[in-house]
Length: 153
Image (cartoon, helix red, strand yellow):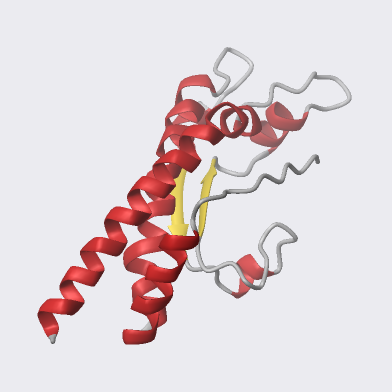
């Protein structure tokens, strides 16, 4: 499986604000209120693309689009076993479909069937939009949490 790595630049100011918030309160709570929410919002276009482009047809008994889901969370112990999740990752967002022989065969192909990738294509198609939404939403959520913390003082 090919892995694509891309950099997000221009987040230094947001990172500094986020670090300040985490120093004032519980880091996990701040992460849930900012990074997790922003990651989920950012992956929404990928989720919608998967629901639109997932293969359907007579040879596919389960409509993969109906099993698509979007989750965002602080990585748990199981997540950290993945080579795609680093120990320093604070939040992850995942668009997936029900794991089955049908979904695996469609995404990766078999000896008798050509691959019809739709998950990887959706992310590749929407990655710039994902990054733009993530920056905007993270800034918004950081401002909201900072405002709440100021009111508590």
